[in-house]
Image (cartoon, rainbow, N blue to C red; front, side):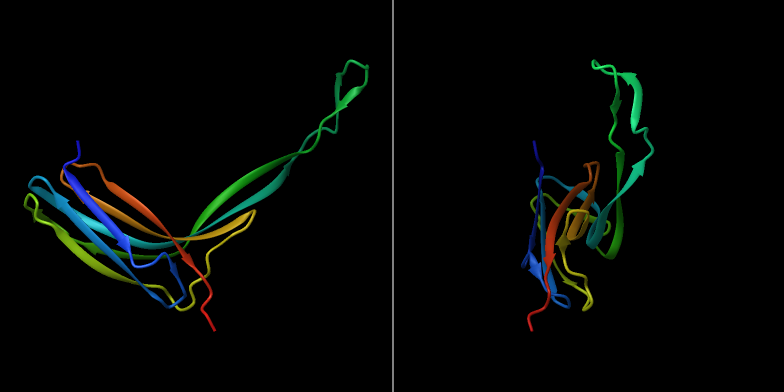
Length: 156
């Protein structure tokens, strides 16, 4: 049974570098509650995959049914790494006492940098933008919501 409602809305999911994105938050509890904090991150990560060859023997000494050694193809090891490209953090509602059915609301303006890299996804490389909202209150588990954003080149 849920005793709380948290709504997160973005003004748009597609932006250009330098644009401002509005994030609206509304929280309502069905009982009195202590809100520790709400954290909103504008976050960009790059995820890339690298391949490297692992040593292997080209012909095995184990005979096959025909009596010859079998050929073992070379093996490739794939490694995926992730790195943070951009992060901007906003904190809201620190140490608030919330009465039952009394809503907490906020609107944040998330400004993208003018030189923000564009969102893209290739076979071995991705750049992903997202808004991450974390809500810490009372003895409740941390509520986390991730909303993807697409950054496109500015219109000329």
